[in-house]
Structure formats: structure tokens, C-alpha cells
Image (cartoon, rainbow, N blue to C red):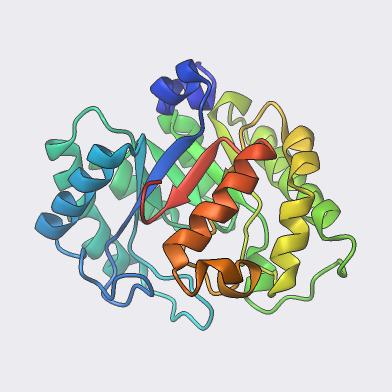
Length: 266
């Protein structure tokens, strides 16, 4: 099996540049677009623009995980997600698609519809997810901070947050490997904005080079796009969250991040 970047971001890997993962929301309550791209037709139009701007792959989600989110039942998430994935696969056959879901039943339906990757923010919370990914040979993104995002106490204080993130990502990787998923199929996400508050994110960004080194050979994906903490971190962006996202991403790339999950491709 080819390594994750060569398999899903071959042009970026060959050029030695970071890959852009364009976000396509199939939710009616997205914090970033208010559900403007929730229909297959609107999603395809939005995705075409992302690809034209340079997106290497697309990430499609149908359940918001913003702070205070309301969980979506699996059947409703599947109803939202699958038609969009199928439409994107038909319209953009050469572009890898990631299904942003933590539910194995939804991931299965998305893979059937043409998705290539599962982006699981819960890092295998669903006991059926690992076997599904292994059997399908799909790519898998694992994220740190999901329990803490949902109120679990964080086992770290400011000053030790980069180490906390790295421990969490290594534990997630170990679970995937123990379940028989190939290391080449894995990508790791520090989880900016998940279990991290305000300046916590800046601290983790400062320690990102160590996180990247500790996660090798798995590539690191960052997903800061348009998140609330960016305004205080980058006052020079004057409230422009896409500009603040670009500033964050530049620092992340300098620290070794290889995939940037963004609403607006830089």
C-alpha cells in the first residue's frame, strides 16, 4: 500500500508541498456557511470551485461538531451525506473524497457511494469502525481531543498541552494498528479547537513540530479553518477568519503539517 500522502494527495506529495483538503458541508446548520452547500447540486458547485482553487482532496461532513452541537442520528446523517458523496464522485472522479463521520454505518454507506477516506474525529469510538476501514482498505484520519470536547476532564494543563496531544495521537494510532489497519492508511489530526480553549491552541501550534516528529511516519493534518480562537490569535487579520486561517496554516506548514483542512483554499 502506498503511504497516505502518495495515495490520496499524489500531486502535493510529488511536489513536496502541503495538500489542501477542501471542506464541503452537507449540514443545514454549518457554522461557516449556514447550510448553503447541503444539496448535492450546491455541494458539487462549491467543490468544483475548491478544486479549481487547488484543493487536492475533499472532506464531506453531515454532522456539525461545533461547541454545543446536537448529535445527528445515523439514518439522518446518512440521508444528508450519501447523496452528496455520490454526486461529488460522479462530478469529480479523480478527486479523493473523505467522509467526515464517527459512525461506522454512515462510513460504510459513504464508502459504498465512492468515498476513499474516513475522517473519524472520535478516533474509533464506534467499535465497528476499525474493521470497516481495514476491510475496505480505506484511508483513516484520527483526531485527538474528542472526549474532552464532550466534557471529559483533560489530562493536561497549559504548559504540557503539546505532549498531551502527542500522547493522544500515539494512542489512537496504536488502537488502529492493533485492529489491523495499515500504518500507511493513517493520517493524524491534533484536534485544534477540540479539548483546547483559546490560547491553548497557540500553545499546541508552538509545539507542533514535536508532534509532527512524534507522529512520523504518519502525516499530520490540521483543521483550524474559521474557528473562533483564531480572532484572538491573529488580531492582524481584523476579524477575517479566512485570513486568520491562512496565517495559522502558514505556521503549521513551517512546523511540518502536510494537510490543511480549509473552507477557502489558500
